[in-house]
Length: 425
Ligand code: NAD
Image (cartoon, rainbow, N blue to C red; front, side):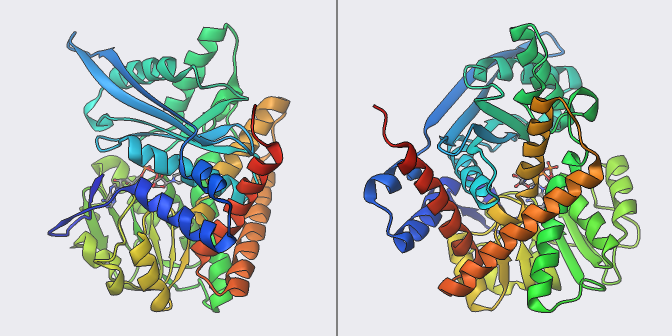
């Protein structure tokens, strides 16, 4: 896939699946995994491509392409978000599915990894078209779905409403309500308190843990957020509550900066009204590349893959990079950041709050008994702190970066599960 880094004159071409496989090989070599296990883990177990027609508002019919990929099911049912984006493709979905497997293993949640995507630009679809597309896509991939089989969740450009349509479509096929088939639903139909903010909240817990280890106070710390969406905006709001100063943010339309700090609550209001963070009063417009190079304590990439690469990593001046997004840093950039003494809290740890509270939602749906938000946030914090501590210790012990450490733990856990279950037949 080719991902444009906003504001950059060139387009870097990188394949997220190749990147995910390289990350796996790096861990597998260190762990000395048997060759057959590496081969199993480097491939996705099930890959479904669907092409389906949708009736548009003007009466015409448009054919869309979608994917659902299950990477590995050794530790539990498949779990992973659904992305609506014009650039999504099979290799991106494969990479995201593989990252979900490792993520669930890092936080010791009993799921395997999956991901889905539909090639579309949701900004160009009406609400009715979006609903029709979602219901037909759900129907096409329903051979894989089920509360014990494969449980989708929100990702880029999908939200609780889309999850509600998925849950309703699946339930209509069965003739009764199956809330546990999807997470990230509205609370009214079996969603969990705290799920909407969970990924951003988890990013903040990871930032707090990292700051403690580096001896940085978050009070007054400068924070830069790339991608002011669900994850980025929540992280900004919660870090501001910790006393941090959000000095720059961006979205797909551009980036803005104010060294004295931007009020994330007002910014969210502005983005909802204006459709972008651009034009926020009192902020200066900067390029996306300049945003990544700002001097700050915390840089949170929370947009898409492949944003910090060999080409721009040397310009990063943050003390730590906390990956809200999946796959924002290339392996080459990882090496540069490590050499420059910049701590990277990897995606499979930093943004695991989403899958963790998705798991809580699924457990609540299955029990038909719901918890209060305070309880959910406290359980989330415990899991994030414990996982952070384990990854940190592994990094110290093996003298490796946090990503390698997280992979060593996760890949070993998944490999153990594959071996214990054995081969069938
Ligand atoms: P979202 O659609 O709510 O937000 C994405 C934001 O990124 C939008 O504001 C968009 O305008 C912006 N953006 C897109 N391209 C950009 C670019 N090139 N430069 C700057 N900004 C850009 O999506 P989200 O759910 O917040 O997901 C963001 C990232 O977090 C993705 O990588 C996703 O896979 C990951 N993630 C999300 C969750 C979740 O629970 N939603 C969980 C784990 C990981």
